[in-house]
Image 1 (tube, helix red, strand yellow):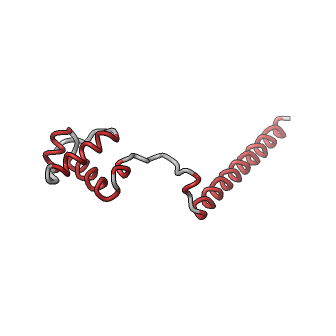
Image 2 (cartoon, one colour):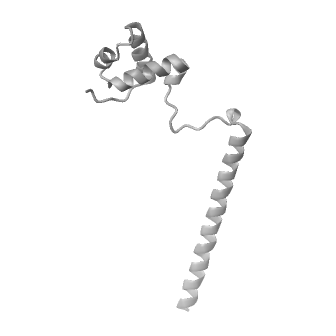
Image 3 (cartoon, helix red, strand yellow):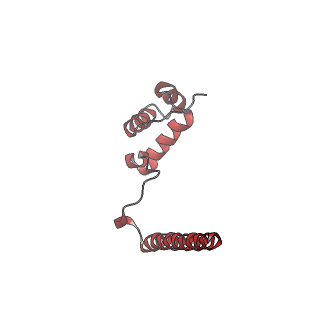
Length: 106
């Protein structure tokens, strides 16, 4: 069993096209490109179902605001407001504790 490795977008395209052109021989593809069997299969399936763009790695990237639905946009705004409120509560709590400590000292 070959351990998987990181691949670039161009490599994923090459792996998927090679596998498709060689009658979906995932084992041969995995051995040739030094990737795991599962990676070769995943790239091929993604390429067939979603096209070449599906092979792009979008983890950790935000969606452009233009593509967000109204519900997604409202959820993002709500999340920001909750974070602001929590920060304000933490600051108030800190200042309260600081005032208490200063009163004890003198």
